[in-house]
Image 1 (tube, rainbow, N blue to C red):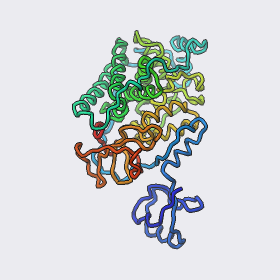
Image 2: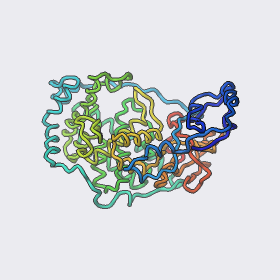
Image 3: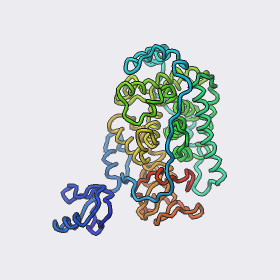
Image 4: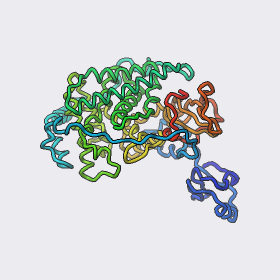
Length: 473
């Protein structure tokens, strides 16, 4: 615990953290407005000192696990955004309309019932049973070791200031074009038109090429927010980008990463056949609706098998991405020993991307909070600890592309991790202490590894500021 003097508590401010007494009891809770009555009560009790959690104390507790002892985290505050300059607003989302009924795309759906009974029916279809047989007979090896030349060792790392505006504009254009192409391909599949495997392979290869040319670019791009009304297209692209990044951190080679990227890209394709009134529902799903969502891995298997030329592993990744290490996933409630390593990578990327993106039923989390969730989920047994560790090593506790507030009052973008110093990444200062957006020419980078006077004190909601994705990168 860190000691602070009462003079740090001022009237009309909102407590940005919990304040404790010497005995460890909370005296002022986070979010409480400091008024004259509260200050008077503090003085009457002759309280002159408070205590706050040191930066990262909450995360250290999360990482106090045998399997995560090697994290060696130094700090990392879990603060919510507040009092930020309102630079722009977020456009509302609209709901798309289906064109063809799902049973025309997959005739097997004519005999599939709604709810839990329907899940059990589709699990018994021939395509799903073929995968199950391969799993039960150990035809498929679920553990995969890195082979060949690790992509991370040959990827180029571009330093701040060396990316031209032309290069950044072209990269954003390619990203938006990839989402548009994803929409085109998915709508073809949704309406039972033939799609060539080469179209998907070409997209994923282009993402791998981007990583090789600029290893931190993919994760920065994953912070972009598409204007598409159906979140599935951007989600599929972003999960692919994040999965490639985690797989590279794990040490996989280009061929292995292509397989992982393909599975990540198509992991949720089955949701195309889930009714829109369920996918876009703003209220909690009822029991039957929740089971309808749980059909999508099997629906994905049936859609993917129509694409000739895809690696066989893509279907398995699609099938197992929503399984969890502790048997709390679906569709088969398998434990970690029975889940493919590639699916474990995609599951972490899928949850992180979902948490940091807006959905009809909830706002997005700030990237730091999403990372904190993953660490808690490891403790709960949901995710593989090593996969989350590789993720953290690649992008830091404050993920690349996210925004943070400093003890100087400035707002910065995270542009590069710093090894095991998970809460001391390299940043670029983009908003001054007086809330002025800095021109590109005035943006400078700061390495928190060497600048010990500068610290992150707050994780910022990217959407609230709506900073252009390449600004300061």
